[in-house]
Length: 479
Image 1 (spheres, rainbow, N blue to C red):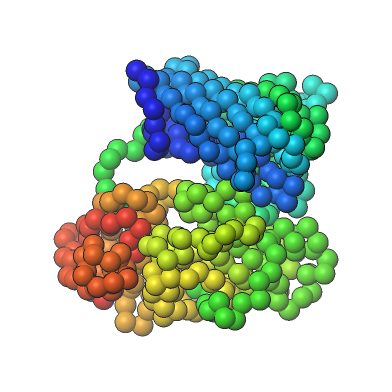
Image 2 (image 1 turned 30 degrees about the vertical axis):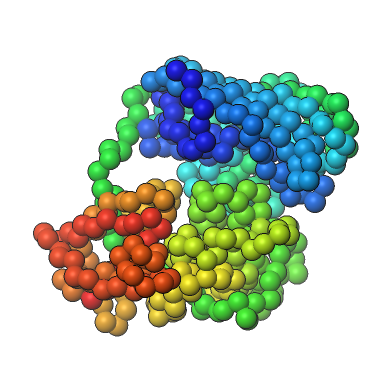
């Protein structure tokens, strides 16, 4: 059956589960293990801004364990300068092909035009070896780096392969071309990006040029994958980590924005003995959809840890923290004033603490973000307790031990209701956790405008507390 789709679709290619959204393949998993973060086609303009596609049609043929997608898209702001025909096929054997036929409609300059493959750093950094087939056909062995690499992670190669400890084999090959791979954490992304160069002979694209690229992903698993059920997200609160302290939080009025982390990381010598090193966090520099902005928050941890590796005594200031991309836009990002910003800021506070940052400046407008930051300011200087949630699940959480007892922050990262169960039986002050303070969109549970701070009693039964979080809701369990 052929479908014309405009929203996200969950698909299967044999053992591989994935999401198709906005013309991209996202979160490719075998069982619960992410193997590839994204596969997509991208045009980077002369100033490195990304041209986003305008889809003229998207058709999907879906089977239980396979799929076929065909898309046609145009690119350009004032006028279309490029058109693509994209075909994606996922087979029952775990093979996925992503093919792009492109035509230049008007002369323009592009830094890169081609297919990109993202590998999520959260699941691979510092613990996953890989091999590449080099340009001359030789094979090299390496590892996804734990600290943020100032250099390319892999030079020119036609394919990359790795095998996980639980027997999942992954190979990604570019047909008739070469990849290079960079550490995108330099720019606030939580991934390594394998990128391709223009199949159009130069960066000066001229009307009438045509080109083709195709990426082949092969996945095999020796054992049946384990897949989480639709049960509520279960959260276990750990012990406070004295090294993970909520940093000093400053308002945007005290901002002196600096470049992204690539600046100090690629020019380390002047920063080794500095008193303070400042870098900004703009996680929408490459892509700026909701998924990208949420997933990239975890990059703060390796950024700060990498800084400490070459400047251990430095004071780390992250300034500015913003949803705005580095390239000018006609208007401010509307998400600044939406519930999304509140959930986003709450997560950023958590990962700043886990990273060990000293100071942070949030340049995020809107009542939802400001309300969350006001509540977070009450925890400055306090160690946080990490939780059992995984970085890219639907819920994030952390806890802070305050003088009046434990506060557990729960954050819904999605546009869907999420059921949560929090285990409190072995947590200090667990018996006192009875109140939920909710930061909500107007009209959901309150008639007031803007975010509403509401207190309600939620019983703890047998050491567990169960509740449902609304989309982008931030809930704080307090004594």
